Image (cartoon, rainbow over all chains, first blue to last red; front, side):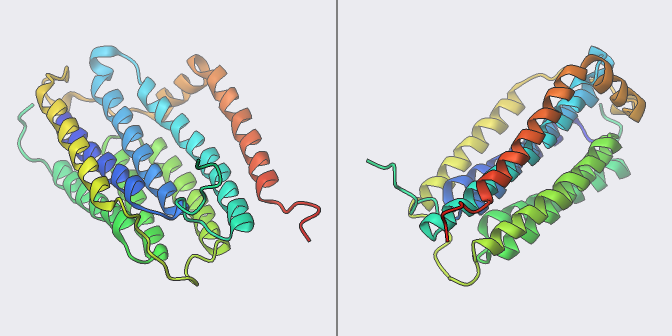
Length: 104
Length: 172
């Protein structure tokens, strides 16, 4: 298996790419994709810590957390896409910078 | 820790490079549908890395839930919002600022990773695979209450999504 540091660096790069997507994209669905990339990086990190730490710490809680993260991500995607579809019906756009009804 | 460059490490780096290039494709592609396809490739790379980390269960869950269910939902949302019919700028005005912020965050994260002394086993070959039975035991004994709660949460969220996306009675 690769050393823990290599996995952590790869996950850090994946997380930063996700942050870049959230900060640069306009389309709400693409922003959601970037958030999913960030969630993937975090759950991969949890699994890495659980696998490398089970000898010293004796449990695999991180793996269980990755499982929960995936389930909650599914719920989150369903809700967010419902909101996007509703927004598109009301405002005829899926771009977050055009949905500024609450902007003062 | 030094047990040479093994085949597993080579496969890990191939998967990691594929995953990261696809992820860059997700955030930079000029076509929304291409971004969604890059996303699938990136998810497959993550699933492969789960396999290398010996957690087949999470890899399967990743492919089943992310690789199929979430991707299909996203493709439906792209079609329902008619993303391809109206060509438009995909990036906001603050794009250089966003890239700079992401690079700064990356530098901070990698600096933290390098500066930390991690408590890991002496040799990575000493790590035992995480078996399906161990994961099942953990989920259905220690984490049974969160498991039930997350099931209820998923049901409520999916009902809420249907409520949100269904048309109002006075819409037409």
